[in-house]
Amino acid sequence: MTEPKMPAIEEAKTSTLKKPAIDFRQIAFDNIVTIIFVVICFFGLLLAKQPAAFVMNELVLRISRNSFLVLSLIIPVLAGMGLNFGIVIGAMAGQIALIAVTHWKITGLPGFLLAALISVPFALLFGWMTGKILNKTKGQEMITSMILGFFAMGLYQFLFLFLIGTLIPMDNPVLVLSSGVGIKNTIDLKDGVLYALDGIYKTRFFPALAGFSAIAAIYSVYKVFKVRNDVIERVKLPKYLMYTVMSILGIVLSVSVLNSKSLTAMIKFPVATIGTILLLCAFNLFIIRTKLGQDFRTVGQDMHVAKVSGINVDRVRIISIMISTVLAAWGQLIFLQNLGTLNTYGSHEQVGMFAVASILIGGASVNKATIGQAILGTTLFHLMFIISPFAGKNLFGNAQIGEYFRVFVAYGVIGLSLGLHAWKTQVQAKRKQLGEE
Image (cartoon, rainbow, N blue to C red; front, side, top):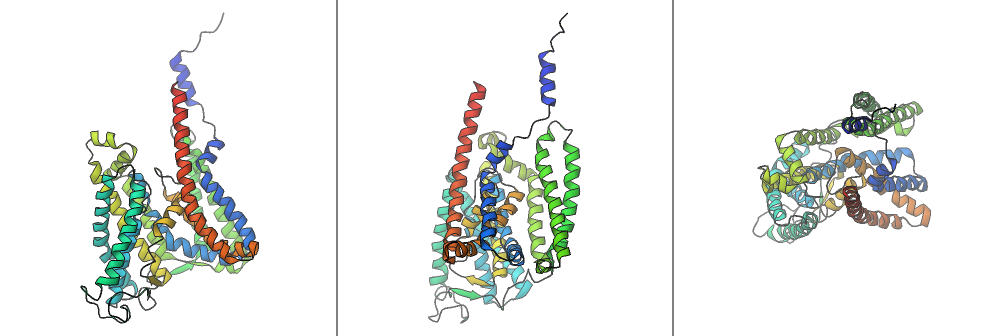
């Protein structure tokens, strides 16, 4: 006798319980930009031939300086508004507040905190206006926010070149040009907010990295054992395995560096600044779990479905841009207090471009961005910034070639990422069509 065939329902149930194989080709396909950049940075490090202590010190400095700005991009992506090139407008709000605080001669941490407070109403107003305009150009938010940034630069220059000293009185020879009209091109923050946040407390980097990696390893292993027997959550298994491996590598690296007693082991990082960045990460995780965060997700996935569900789509989109603009203002203040110099008419120009390039390098796209992608992208992008002049000098005998290369990469990675995103969308659409057929 032949055995009776399994019913279709039982067969379908059995098939769903099968463990999904890890598709390495799909992982490579989804992270092609990050993989390309890892390869570029690896060969760049070999060509640069710089001491590990120098590279690590510069990298820690740049990550603490720039991460807040990159993380400010996540919420608009979540709300389906793409990459917000308009964070340059938030950076202008921060600079307006910083110039005011410098004029009032309020220095140190009080000056920094006051500038952060003053920047909020400006950033909220600018964000609200930007959101209103972006709601009129649905589907074209990225190019619109970029053009709005250029337009805002003109208004910003008009304010500080012509209105200061005429309609807005300011008697300050340190800030105002000798003609009495307009703000100077460069403002020294040495006697102002320089290291206001960074200078609160610094500690050695690698002992802190070892402790953080140990906690991350314990958490990752716990998640691996938790999801491996869960049919639905098992798709996250590769991610947690990767986190486990990275955490163990962090512990091994930290222990080996500390045992070597080299200059690399003496690298320090600003605890307050990194703590502020971690608070922003916690805020992003928290807001995703709130009703507003769920509205962001719903609007980002399908505006029509969100509208039918009773969500005020335009209002949610405006709120996401307002939050991003405020965060960008604070991020610019963190950037400038570390840099120590305010280029009145230039410090904000490349903020949007470099932040967008950083998050794209981390593997984000116009419709998906995570905290991990933002931090990874910031690390790789600024590692390239550190090593490219030295690699250019050693390879071609001219450090200026390295400078050209990193500017080229900043624009090129945006074009490559957007092109790949369009290609992935087409491929997925074809697969879906073939599956339906």
